[in-house]
Length: 461
Ligand SMILES: [Zn+2]
Ligand SMILES: [Zn+2]
Image (cartoon, rainbow, N blue to C red; front, side, top):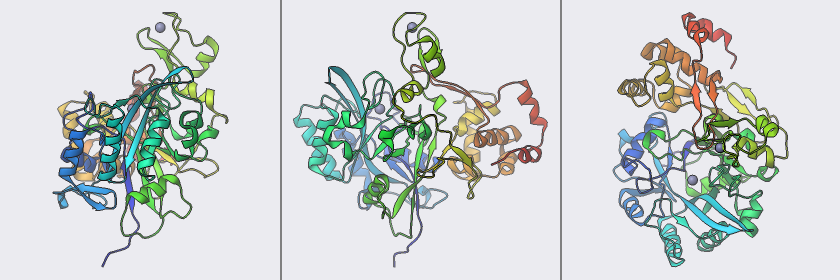
């Protein structure tokens, strides 16, 4: 007999395989599965199904578990997600880069495309090839078709194909990008604009920034990692929750949840976000001129570089200001009854909330005072995971005392600071990642002498 139960799916659907440029050779099904487990991910995008060789590898290594949802053939108990004891699942996802001109401007738009089956993926690939697209050149193919032409192609094959505009604020490569994007969804997608029901925030924006746009009022706001190496998986996530007891999770369930169907069995529970300042394009600036401006500075000083005199790369913050119909929205931070991390909620409760995290390796790197890719950080990371569960669980739920016992007071306080958002970030700009500082100055350091108990009394979740 099939058991009915409430289910939760932690999903990362935008990432890349070893067939994409500048991606780790370790991005192959087995290692991706292992790292998904470490991170606490239940559902991974396969990435790159448009690449013929990768698609063959996927077909050979995956088997269908539920309609449109796959798992490794040799999946065994050891490869289940530690907390949920579910197998790590896959759904067919890819990212397609469209370069074309429209309205007298050059456009570069990245879209995440999800396919309900291998058969549909193969059909789409065949049609793309017929139109002269070179799918072998890169796991994230660059095609000359416009967003509208891509939509027409995939939806004439199967209406269940999902297109999610990727990292929509990135200046150079996105639907709302300041350099080569559009001002509205309709401008980009024409008569297909209603088929776009979800957008990806990207690392440089958070949901509250996206809530400000009228154009996104009825869209799902989703977050994924865009990982190029296994350790980066899950740095942003979308968590789905069943609204009633269910027996399985299918592609259709994913579709219904993202489409926000009223009677859908599934919904988005929350998203996991980077601090947007950490993203590469949060502020306006020039990398080579070392110029970095906040939105206020941009308003006061204009958009021309004071060093080289050329136009600055407009940051996501500035671009949001340009397109927003509502003033800055300050989300309300609320306690999470099931755990200890604070949730950011929209005032009117009409949208799923989100949490903001910093990767555990970054916390360890600061608390151990050593490089993020050092053996010391790696050993400490693995030790914590072995004893406490996935990275997501450690960052959001583990007791601080448990973290302290295993990894010392500074790591435990670091996790607490991340949970409460008491950290400082130098914002990223023009392709330079922002820098997180959990510990800022001498005064902060001396607070280490406080015990965790004292510290906790000061904290309001
Ligand atoms: Zn992209
Ligand atoms: Zn400059």
